[in-house]
Length: 236
Image 1 (cartoon, rainbow, N blue to C red):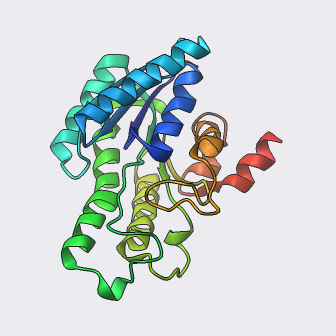
Image 2: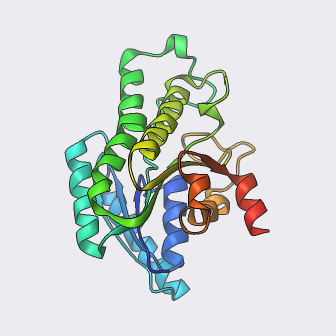
């Protein structure tokens, strides 16, 4: 797989599982996170996974916080310098200030609300904006999302607001830029952000993301929302 793939928030959870999926398929994967030590450990683990799979894949990473557009700019610039034009971007970095289902929005602080949107919405905007100069001609950008963005779920607070906002950012770019930009919904995944009860393992849905950026029809992804149903129907 001769692809250069950039994944924000690629050090844990869904982002790390998706990074491993790509590197084991032979891609060059660039990841970032807010803790440099954790980024280094994740890159080492990804390189080991590529070696075990004998895929020819490779990994690289750096500390970068998506709340800071200058750090994002540097990350995308160096990723492209390391491996050439970027074929796929997974704007995955996100946070939640509380436990899923236990964050009623009427009890949320302004500080928590602002930081959640700065990371989960503005961070997606910064990631796509700074990626644009480095994208390959047929590049695809995907934004992970879920039911919290479209359903009225109790106790999801600003996290739900932010996922709806992130989807709107994706739709805006899809309308205004040449690159294919869309949303990928893997369903409820067991991560620190969503909780773990009755949720899928991140590794089980990571192939959905590879399918979305390599095989799914561009016209279905661009400005749209692809999920487990579409993936399973296309690959069964």
